[in-house]
Each structure stands twice: as C-alpha cells, then as structure tokens.
Length: 172
Image (cartoon, rainbow, N blue to C red; front, side):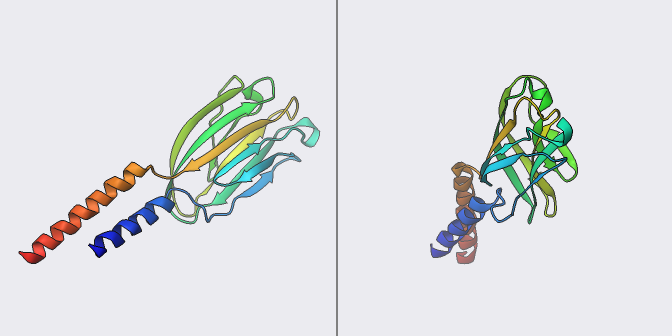
C-alpha cells in the first residue's frame, strides 16, 4: 500500500508541474524603437504592444523563452486593441522563428484556448505587432494552466491497477 501511495504522490507531482515551464525565464524585447511592455509574469501576464516607434513605423513586442524540456503547454488568451481595428495590431505566439496570429483579421477583441507541444530547445513566446504605432496599444492577456484533476485520477487508477496485477502475479 505504501508503494501505491508513493507512486500516486509522484504522479501528482509530475503531472502537476508538467505542461507549464515555470522554471523557464521569459525575456521582454521590442523592435524598431517600440515601447511595448509586460505586466505580471509567466504563467499569467498581460503583454502590451507598442504605441510609439521609430517614426511611426512597424514594431513588435516579444515575450519569449527557450524551452528547457519537452512539454505540452495549454493557455487561455484574450486579445483587445485600442486601435481602429485588430489589423493594425496583430498578436499571437512565436515558435522558433515563426509567428502564429491569434488575433482576428478584423474587430477589436477575441479570445480562446490553445494547446501546443514544445520540444526542449524551442524558442517560444508571445508577441504583439504594432503596424502603425499610433491610435493606441493592443493587449494580449495570457494564462497558462496544467492538466485537469480528472487526468490525475485516471493516471492514479491505472497505476493502482498495474500494481495490483504485479502483486497478484507474485503471489501466484
């Protein structure tokens, strides 16, 4: 029984911390003289795009990390812009050198849930691009989360069954 309890505690620990890279350090960067910023810190933060840049031209605000170990990352995102339309302030996530837009093609708000598999060594994060650097900022709110408790229960039940099967074979 103690072995089962130890395995269940280990499973809860592993599943409770996997899926979210709490140990990874995130870095804020702006291109082309932008003044974007972040409020809060990973795993829950608000990333604000630039409202000024080099002569009113395009700038991008990045909040990125290098992933330390393979993981599945799930996050809830909310997007809004003060600009005329989301076209002028697209936002999304970045994986290695590629950007993937989450914001709508038009409109001022959007939200969703997204899950992504990451490999150790991947460069991952979020961005807000400010095409015109005027008329207000865009904001991308992000909250990451771990697997739901039901997954832990399912794993624990499977481990308990496996241990019972091993014990039954030993006594036979």
